[in-house]
Length: 392
Length: 116
Image (cartoon, rainbow over all chains, first blue to last red):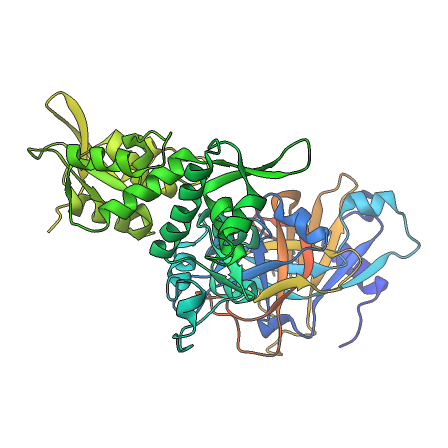
């Protein structure tokens, strides 16, 4: 196709009765480039911060298997992707200058031939979302680590996952995945991320707490080296250290020695889980007695340590307690609420909060969630929440 | 799938979005690629003026609150479906500015037949 000339442009201006004196001297002659109709280009609307990340040379990743809705991940955030339709035609034009750019750099030419690279009536919209991390625990629970001895009997039919595997399978950013691995006390064994089988964890924790007791160490100052020395013959040193890291806070004293301050709440919680997992429910007062006796000397049990782990039924006589782990509940908001209302028809805010707190989006409150997914009423002078829809 | 920087090093290209109402159709029945769209002028005050066929469109320069990234699908695979963007993409350019043409086009009257 012949390239448009300045003379032709000027002729058009005359026909259009536009006064060249009122226009900037440079014209852009727009034509469709060779790839224009191909549909290989599309637009992605960027949330704040993503533009700067791209300009800094960082990548964005789209994650999702065929049966999942795709998400976009930056280094540390996850976004849902949705198509937005406009009723207008959007043309993307490389090398097209704005009036400011033209005024700032008066060039010698008065005609720019710009080729439209593509066009679209829609674009991808992003919305920040919670990283979809439930799958992470599910994958690692396929084959929990039960200790070095049991491994010999295992046929390796189970999948094991490296960091790269997890990055390609989990719809979350790298930072969110690595953070979650820490939260669930996963550890790397032979290059693969593993979750420790709970009973094995308790076995390890028992070794540590019994040693603390026999050595009369203060719970806030448990020495790493001595632990490894004393227990290294019973269990792998990495596992001893991992237990201390999971159930303690690491610090270094002035002499450069490594100590752990044992985490009372976390240890009491683990002991409670160990007791509760063996039956459907327990008499509350009996449980509280056994629980206090089972935790290490010097630690105090409190029911609020069990938020998101166990639920007390105050309506039964006698009062009972049963295991209900938030991580076993659905990840989707509506499904989570359906599940909770299936377990109990009416909830107080205090009881339900630990089981919905993780659903809150960036600036969302528990109250907002309850307004959206539940209906409130008064029961015996107390505000309770129940389902908006009938539960079968 | 990775959305990576196409050039590797160096700044990402800055493109401009031109937003028009309705459909874009070539005057002739030829294919779109290679065909002319029109002339884009700016007034001295910076108002974009687009002459498309027999129409004049007046628009405005808008700085986008949310810039766009232009994604190009790699590997000659089928078009990204509107529902699921699976596949490999490269970020080719960023768009921070758009020229919005929303006013009704003014037709250019080239020849008024004389009444006899």
